Image (cartoon, rainbow, N blue to C red):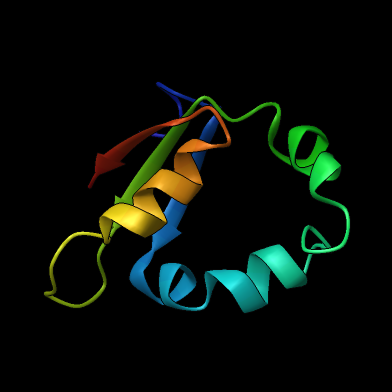
Length: 75
């Protein structure tokens, strides 16, 4: 999968649940949202990998992730 699409961000349900703390605040995007383009510019696709059987990500979270300009796929 990685060889076919090297610009892929793999998102697990754990990372999605804690996205604000680990990604938004962890990378400082809450204070400097203009950096998101720099951090994620090489990603073209976003794959959601569920570790636990649960529903797909909420619409709100999926919308926030699409601001990176990636397409969201479930894996």
